[in-house]
Length: 67
Image (cartoon, rainbow, N blue to C red):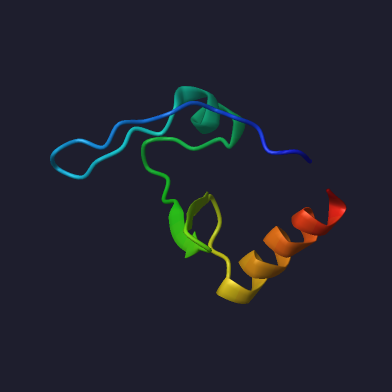
């Protein structure tokens, strides 16, 4: 699966972001959902389901090799 651009968000003074509606709909994320953030090679990654750092690294590296 190729990366899909969803949109952009502006960080508020309080440090909050709004997840674009298309992403919420595509991933079935509602107001009570939790999401998880990882920093990987100067990239911020948001995932719906909690992953171990090694699982995330394997997923990202596998996607890079397919390109």
